[in-house]
Image (tube, rainbow, N blue to C red; front, side):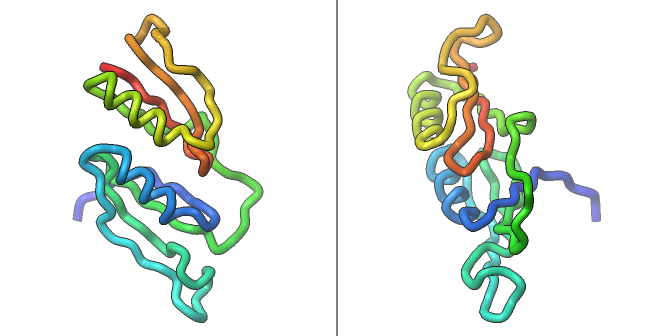
Length: 131
């Protein structure tokens, strides 16, 4: 077996909701596998023990932590989306950005025709770029 690397996102109760948003917004995305906590297991029954997804070609793992931590997501790590059309850019930025916080408004910053950076409503940081 070869080694494999993928981002791992740890949520506290919103993992499945976040995954559903991501796969419905980013083209060519799907949940590969999802395992939920059952009765008597360490996590809250019905929350995500471990999920694997493909988000636009990026293998992604995530879960709902059964332990509360004193930290959450940070913009220093973000998911970068390259869009081929302005319509795709606008849809992705609008859908993922709802209820989140804008770090850089959509604009031409010189390095890109159109670029935005924001945290989604779950705290995950996204950079969206128009190629």
